Image 1 (cartoon, rainbow, N blue to C red):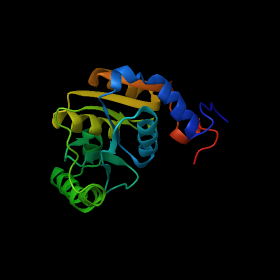
Image 2 (image 1 turned 120 degrees about the horizontal axis):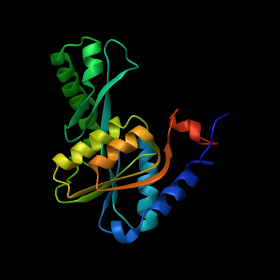
Image 3 (image 1 turned 90 degrees about the horizontal axis):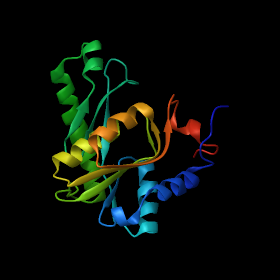
Image 4 (image 1 turned 120 degrees about the vertical axis):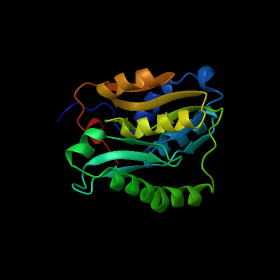
Length: 197
């Protein structure tokens, strides 16, 4: 059956809330980086009296194997690519950049315009990037890069569950980490919940 860390999403939320110290974050913007992350950001925003929003990020999949993620791009047009996989699949870089542009124009831009009409203003803000699970860290890395390139003053990450490998990377990149549980041999996010919906 494996190890179950949380009964459900509500318990994971309570665990994450317990990690946060309001005196450290009272002037921070909570930024969800996924639809599931929105649940956490919205609820924490309500409970702690903090502003929240969504930083839209889309994954880039391989044209050779559509189940393989090659990178991610955010609404600020910042992206992270996994060079080793792109080279292993022998995909032309021109095709990758064309796919990134198409992904931005056809998916990300309409999502942003539908939600709030403008790219989220982040210059001189302090933010906490939020998701439910960080496994490979690709989406979170894209969020971190987007924040720094947009002129954010401080970046923190808050997640109920993170893989050990991703945690080691994040520790080098952000100002603060608020972590529920660190997982040594990560399986999948849903694996750590008794009732996952």
